[in-house]
Image (cartoon, rainbow, N blue to C red):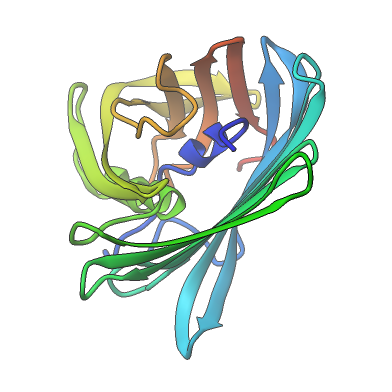
Length: 253
C-alpha cells in the first residue's frame, strides 16, 4: 500500500475556512516521478470541484499515482480521495485505493467530527485472489484531518501565517486506523530557478509524518511556491532503495 503513497504527502498542503482558499475548483497539478533520477511514473493532484455527499456540498480532492518499479517487478497504482466540508475544512469521507501487482486494497473512512468517531472499512484482494474484509470504529481527536485533506489544510495555513525558518505547524491526522500529528518545519525562504524562471520558494520539511507512511526512515524536503497559492513544485524523499522525486510538470505563470 505504501509504495508511491509518498505522493499523499505531497498532498500535504491546502485550505481552511480562512477567506478565499489557495486553489481553484478546477485546479490540476501533474508531476513526473523519478527513482534515483530515472523516470518511473506520474502523479497528479486535483480539485474536482464541489460534490454532493449525503445531501451536503463538499470539496472533492483527488491524488493519484502510477509507477512502474522495475526493481520490484510490478506496477503500482493509487488513488486517494477526500471529501471536505468547506466551512470548517474538516473531512467527512476518505477513500484510498491501492493496486500493487495483482493485489488490490480499498479503505473507506467516514468521519463523525461532532462525536469524534471514525468508521473504517477495509477490503483487500490478496495475491491468491482471496477476499478480506474488516470494519472498525475508532476515536479521533477534535478537528482531525485525513492524509489528503491535511495537505490542503496545511497549504492554507502556510499561506496565512508570517513564516520564518524554524517555525513549525502541526495538525492531527487520522491514518491507517491510528491518530498521529503531522509537524511541518519551515527550513528557508529563498529564490531558485524553476521552469526557466527565477521564483520565490518556501522550503519545508515534514518532521513527524505518521509511522505508517513510506518515509519513516528517511528525510523529505518540499519546495512550495512562496505566494498565496503555495503550490508544491518539487519533492525529494529518501526511501530504502534510494531517492524518490516529484517535479511539477504543469506550467506556471
